[in-house]
Every structure is written in structure tokens, then in C-alpha cells.
Length: 237
Image 1: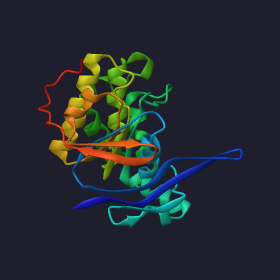
Image 2: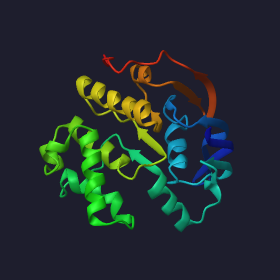
Image 3: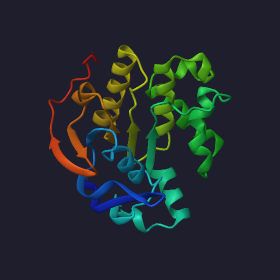
């Protein structure tokens, strides 16, 4: 089943009198249940595409349909509701709230949903357990390692049971061992739970966990490849 459909997807920004188009007429179909890596040089449109898929930004031209919904047509309020229900976003630098515990950071997205406190607790506990950090639930970010912080960030991204998980350089700030752990975790979310994941990366080693690699250059798709599928036991060199 096709989850993402982009047609002539374009995003242009203006800097003074200069027009900058990081994404230029992109056509793309992506099936549900894929683990996709977006690669390309700086300025190629990777993060712009990720932000459009997240509903953080809007296209200047073209259409974007996700799970049958025309995201490019949604009003601001409807877009915010769709994003809170359907998208989990994993940041390179974690973006955890330093004064909140791991539990409270993961709970944050659920506060926007009309569910009971008991249901929130059940979902947070399940997410923390899934990423293997339940024993650190009362720790604050400063008490965690980088890899542990990223696992909390992943738990926060999946706690609403989103249709789509987006990751912007999720291993870019981690050491080799932690990066391998995070990629193993993302691969399990994809294989075992069927989550669709789109990941921006500059590191070709991380694509060993993915089933599709898309290469962007100057805002256009220039190449698509299917790497050897990882087994979950790789090590990032």
C-alpha cells in the first residue's frame, strides 16, 4: 500500500531578493512499512523533505498525500492535529526538556490527546520498556548518556503510535556503539512493529539497516537503490 505520494513537490524560500529552492518538483511514491534513508550533499533538500512530510513546513507548489490525506490542503489546526496523531519525529540532538524526567518527556505528546491518566501511564511505560530504558524513567536528561537520551527521544516519538516515524540524523551525535544500538532499535520498530521510517543521514553505514536509499541532489531525486538488508547485528565503523 502506498503511504506517501509526492507530485511536483516544491519548496521555495526567499532571502531578500534571492529565491532558494531546496526541493524542486519532486515526484515520489513510498509504500507503507518501508525503512527509507534520504542521502545527499548539504542543501540537497533532505531536511526540507522531512519537514514537509512532518507537516512542519508547507510546499510552495505541488501535492503531498500521506495515508490518503492531502496534507498540503489541511488548515493549520487540522494539520497540527494530524501531526500529533500521525507523526513521530526523532531529532539528532534529542530535543528533550532538561527539567523533565525521561517519563515526563515521553508523556508530553500524549498531553495533547483526550485520554485518561491511566492510559497515558500505560503508553509511556510500554514505550520506555520497548526502547530498553524503563529503569531510567525517573532520570533527567543530564543524568543520561547520549545513547540513552536518544532512546528516550525515540520512545517519545512512538508513544502516540504514529503512522510515520521521521528521523533527522538520529546517530549523528553518538559514538559508534550507541549509534549501532539506535539503528538496531529503529530496525526492530520497522521489522517487528511495521512502522514506516524515513531517515535523513550522511553516514552510508546506517543504510545497511534500511531497505531503500533515496539520493537527492539540488532538490531532485537522482537515484534510488535497495541495499543489502541488515540483520540487526551490524556495527557502525
